[in-house]
Image (tube, rainbow, N blue to C red; front, side):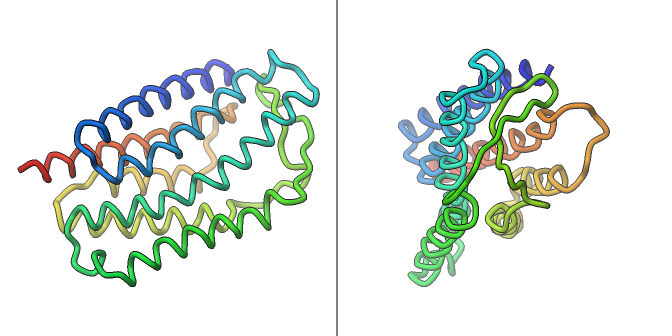
Length: 219
């Protein structure tokens, strides 16, 4: 069942990726540009999880899964820049300041480096079978979400509150809140893929926020 779900998620993210490209090409919305690598990483992530059982154990699948960790580390922190750009697009005064620009880039860089040194460098993978899905995961799994994910989630939530108040747009906030709740709550279902639905909901909310702000710019 999870193999099917991961396949559907990969397809959904691929559609989002195409929509994000078209949005940037047609409206030149900067926030859509920062979503592209994040969505591309999720297309890859879900595709490898869906294909794992067909590829089988071995160096090939191990290396493909190793790339999942790299993409997560390099691309997920870009959502900090997405949050900052949405504030600029909403014409939030302090978001236009050079200090905010510098803070957003330094925080993004710091999160990437933190994840590299705590999660990726020296990473040892081992095969894992769960609900019909074959993948390679860390031999030393963490207890709870990594600091990088917590910080990114907090930044998105904070930015979404400002956008809600400034532009009366609630869906950025709803997507961020649903993602946080979904990550914290253990669902009573026998699936490792269902929780990814919250992540998909977040990305959809981020993309429709870019669409909304693009429409506002045109007015």
